[in-house]
Length: 134
Image 1 (spheres, one colour):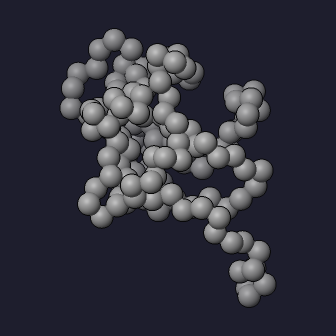
Image 2 (cartoon, rainbow, N blue to C red):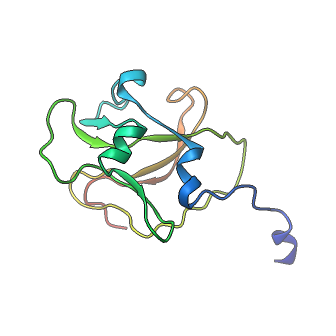
């Protein structure tokens, strides 16, 4: 076990007020509608903060969510899709989650994708649909 601890070193930590500086937000006006054809409207960064879809609370915890308070119309329920600015060829990726959405209509996901997604495939670290039980 001692030898294994020398193989990895922490290269980045994304948390608190700096968390969202590491990501770009999908913007339907720039990037187009959901590429997976879901009934969702991906809010851009300004909309996401203004509508309360993303926030950083007093203890530095980051919230990423969807519109769960209004009736969906148009292209779908307001939600957030973010992509990191960074890229990696390999690594150990860790998320410390206080809460994971569950229930009918939810689809929380954390994917690793290549530069030619979806043609290059993806690695699904988290992908829960509707009422999955784990």
